Figure: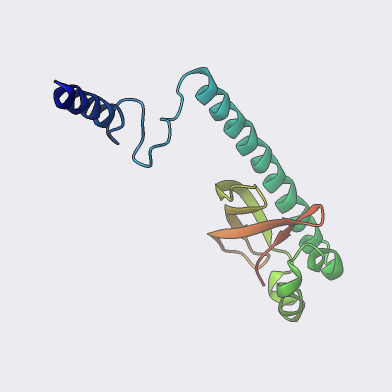
Length: 146
């Protein structure tokens, strides 16, 4: 009788602690909560996305103004430090370029790096749609391109 009771208790413990049981995920962690907590997170992500979108629009508007007014130093200050020298060497190709209709496509977890799809309109005519990366450092956005 003692061995039957021990066997039943062992089976009970094993069945309650199965990885695929209702209360546990594969790594034995509790399953993620759903409901109001999840929708709050979705709301926060939506607000974050809107904020990043507005910041990208503002950045490209200011950058386009600097390029159209021929302010090489102002435009260069908006370029990431590691790309600045090369940008200044090729500035004449950038001069007069306008960046229009930016759309944030991806953002890093911390929101300091974003990929933005943007239309380019060149002073000489013609245009293109490209993906550009922006990094938030030292309290401002910087273009990671030259």
